[in-house]
Length: 210
Image (cartoon, rainbow, N blue to C red; front, side, top):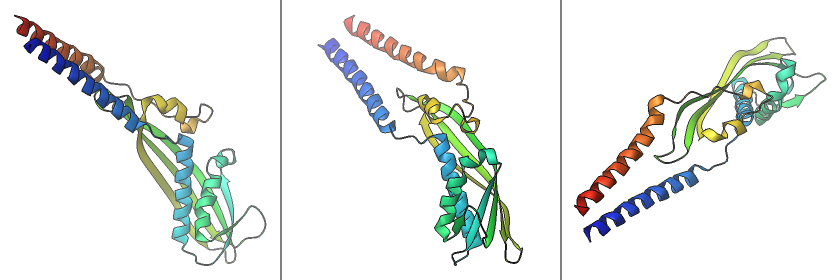
């Protein structure tokens, strides 16, 4: 009778652990934005910040240039989106009151701290994306420089390790980061804990039987 109770307790514990892991997996499943999407979102925040620093209340016209040309498409539309929150009338060509020159200086993706989501959950990793853009705004009416400044925005989140290949773009180096190596002891700890738990269960079963 005691043995039966012990076996039932062990089965219940294993079932609870499995249900806990399943619940953790479901909680972790959320839409994960790609690295390029985050880069563009940060660029939009920079455009918004530039508009806020200028602080113009009128609907000024602005022509915008993003350098280098071959990388402008990464962030140009996002910068326009951010600037448009501040009533600027943006022009691709023709005379304008202001000229905005933006240098896309840096976009960086980093991964760190690989670990499990709970004891039996899937592996997750911290992701950090940073964008640095230099801005120069000139008033064409009097030639005065209204703004010369570097703007950097960054964001951090946690994603499933298995999603890294999906969030990166193989053809866009700026969207890729280096995945850190997992430590030897982190890989060794889980099987040792499992073996220890099995050993304790076997010991208890034989102790009750004797």
